[in-house]
Image (cartoon, rainbow, N blue to C red; front, side, top):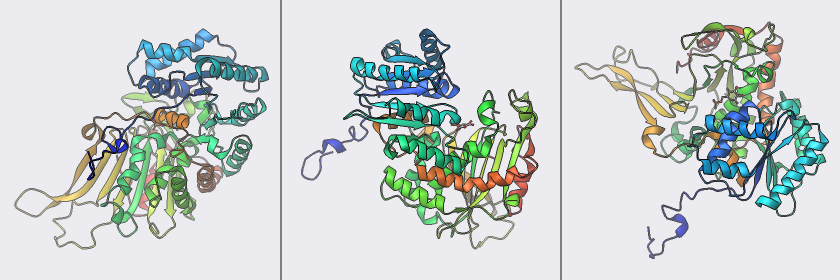
Length: 511
Ligand code: BG6
């Protein structure tokens, strides 16, 4: 719309405000291209980005994997992964264009010849497809291989960007297994890559609903005034999964639920929920505020009373019999690995003093749901008699991260009738009803951000280390215990977790 002076700023017109963000000339190298994550998420995300026209025409993709595969096998594998898991429709034209820029390098991570070949391939693609020498290396490999791959990239000169181009490393989680190992890994990574070259993936930050936490809080006026200890009783952050560990025994056993998702996804959700307003929506300002919150997180003194580790036993899930964790393929029958973890945390600052944040996650729970519930205090006074409010709970604002993305507010309302009776009702916002736009898959968003060099949605070294600082004492405590509490598959976790909240006079929500 023209301004008062009749001039229309082209950058602010309605159609331009949402200019697509398109990656410039570039290539992506995926280490561990035949793995689960790559097949289910990375390859389909690359295809979807290409299909949406968000990758440059000469975009190139190099898969690096074990030597016992032929090029045709690789191509078939990528093709199958795309057909099975991509979200956009399959178009032969997009596939052909992607396939032309696809190369495979076979070898082990310690194999110098393979890394020489990788370097030649990167140069060849620059010459033939015009990638401009811009390459992102995605380490979709078990954490124990991170150091080896990073060292090889350095040794073979792949981490050094030729004049006028960029090189970036994308590192999957978990980043270390405690503070000490995370520091060692950070030192190694930063010996090879500058901080702005490193992108640590936490795919929860790529989810629309997670990015919306800051929009909800800081683009509106009505939430911030009550977003503090004067109004909030406590916060519950739940990430429940109905699946077991599937074929991931090798990765999961010995890592467990707390390291797998509390150290990263759930602490990031806590940070976004509790942080102060950032100066701007940029990587530096976000880091500053998230880090302040993480630094002020304290564990309660009695860890035995305020944390619970659990492990699923047999049960019923979705009408089918489910085996217990110890009977899963590839699991040590004496394993003490946690598949459930619940932790009470305090955020020791003026806004949140005395407000507990309860975090819980588990596999093989009643259903798949991730949510942040901000539970408010009771109204300080009620003019209604106690029978009128007998069924009234407390106000709750629930950010529904997934599935059924949206938000619910619970509040009391008069029950229609001739007497005064007040009962809880809910008001919903659902993405599907309010928006026609489709949410990009988290990995799509994050891969595009890497190619654009946009670090807003990536945790930085300090955040990762601070999160381990929080979790380490809990892990150490549970290592000294007899083993995790048992819970039945298909239920809502160990009774110890219910007792943990009951001690504080509270209850977990049944989402
Ligand atoms: C991963 C964990 O980070 O997140 C998995 O390693 C978990 O164990 C997965 O299943 C869940 O992701 P999402 O996006 O389905 O909630």
